[in-house]
Amino acid sequence: MLSGAAVSLLVCLLAGLPSPSSADPREPPPTVLLAILARSRAHMLPTYLAFIEQLNYPKERISVYIQTDHNQDNTPAMLSEWSDAARAHYSHVTLNTTSNIAYTPSLGPSTWEEDRYTHLMKIRQNVLEEARARHTDYVFFVDTDNFITNPETLNILIKRKVGIVAPMLKAKHKVSYSNYWADMTPLGYYKSIPRYFTILRQEVRGIHKVPMVHSTLLIDMKYENVDKLGYYPMFEGYEGPLDDIIHFAVCARHVGVDMYVDNEEFYGYLFMQENYNTVEEEVTGFQEYLVDYMLPNITVFPSSGYLTDSRPKPDKLGFDEIYMISLVRRPERRRRMVKLFDELRIDAKIFDAIDGKKMTQEYLDGIGVKQLDGYEDPYLKRPLKFGEIGCFLSHYFIWEEIVEKKYEKVIIFEDDVRFKPNFRSDLEIVMSEISELDEEWDLIYLGRKILNHKREVWVKRASRLVKPHYSYWTVGYIISNSGARKLLAQNPKSKMIAVDEYLPLMFDVHPNREWSVKYHPRDLNAFSAAPLLIEPQFYIGQDGYISDTELSAIIDTDKIGKTKKIEL
Image (cartoon, rainbow, N blue to C red; front, top):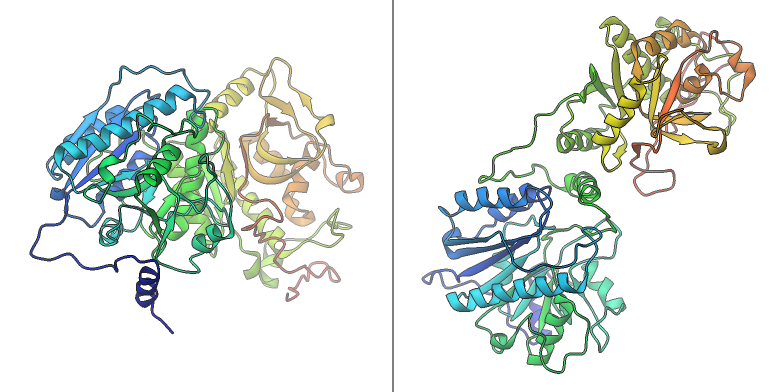
């Protein structure tokens, strides 16, 4: 069985490449020009720059070239602060924050027009010219939506001793997107072939000759024919599209400089751009990417040593309390939510969920839990599960705390929330509209499964509120003190149903009238945000979906008041 190093050596030999070698310790490390090109990336810069800073390469051998323009956020100020602090550590830092180039305003951060491509091609060309003027050994392009989590990346790439090499970056789990192409058409467009997936899955590790690398790549400025490389202007005879990465790849092939992708190690992450219409949508998309794909694999997120955390202090969004119900035995979900709240600057209180898997007969009898006579799940035709009892009790005990502490309004989240873009501002609109009503409200859904849109009625003089009909889920909602008191007044522990059945029953829209008549009065005044402000992290059938209620045991209803567990 060959070791990883032996396999890498074999790949190099078969490809006619020099094997990785250590630099002569008597010579100083090569000089590197690190290129940072940023536009409206204030939400990514703290993470991006922190990983740049932790690269295990002598900073005194790195010059940093930064270009930023056409921003819609605080990117210039952040880069200015970072540059001022970084100059004491790096060989040289150049910061260009203005540009006389004007291009048509794009429809969003994911939309590109010809003049925007041209502008970017000129900037990348400026980087190459800067490196040539400084006689720099290498240029290291790292796009600001790329996160180099492997500190040895730069050392490894330099040891490859090829003209152009990129560290293979991963996008999302089971998403076939990375920073290289395995084939391209004669005009320079992407072409899918099986070899792409062989590289992506790391079935053969090492460096692989490919026609295209982009986003993060190392260029050996002393390599043969690299002096003929350029991003702009386009070389004579070029017939491909106006695109920086395509023109550069075709130019490299034209002048005889091969491109390689290195999949020997795990090097980092590539944020995959969606069709975002606004910077705010991209911010939300990045926050989700951060917590859903990067966080599970990074024990401790580094923080930039050259940036102050200028974000506002976390707050409670104007509420008395914000609860997040979380099972202790699901630490990965709790950690995700804590990081997400930090990104959103939300000060939430963790409420340890009542775990159905730890319930005993004595515990349930002691607190008076009894299933409603005649209850069965509307779809699965079964009694309550212990997980459903635990879920109900988690919400129930929070309702009790609301009354006990005399809170006027709180938010309750479960631990599988995905926030929609503009959550904060949209929540402000919802609360502004609810405050203008001539009636007392009890509950406002922030997320739910709507079962019948046609029976939902818009609230008069409101643009973001509806009167909800029969709905599922308790992923997130706002509840008032009066709402908590109404829910508790029914003594629902003694006639328990699933909590997401109980809420619509209490605002008298539940289709099962046999259950409904056993609760009186059913006068919960409920509303819902429209459109909804949150949704579950995963839906049934998606990879990653886990239901702790459905995975728990079913109660035995043969003996009312003598409930016992049935083992799975």
